[in-house]
Each structure stands twice: as structure tokens, then as C-alpha cells.
Amino acid sequence: MEAEICIPCREQVARYAGEEGCPLCGGSVTTL
Image 1 (cartoon, rainbow, N blue to C red):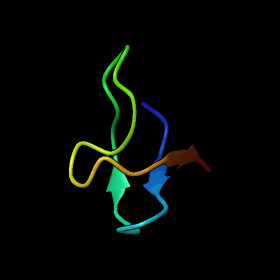
Image 2: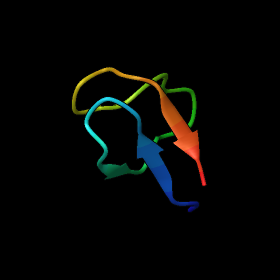
Image 3: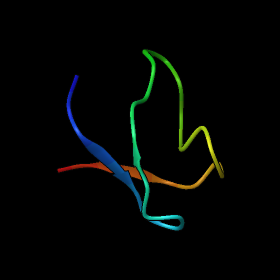
Image 4: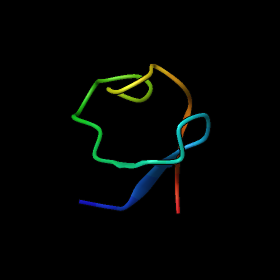
């Protein structure tokens, strides 16, 4: 699984397949 960082909350999150956005705050997630 690749490391992805949420822009608003700046947490490293793991997105599940088909899921959009950060599971914590719903913000945009970018793959590093």
C-alpha cells in the first residue's frame, strides 16, 4: 500500500479501493 497524505489534516492515511478522500476528515488525499 502506498503512503498517502491528507492535505487538510496532514495525516498519513491508507485509502481503500474505490474510496474518495480522507477517511478521517473527508479532505483530498495525495500520493507521495
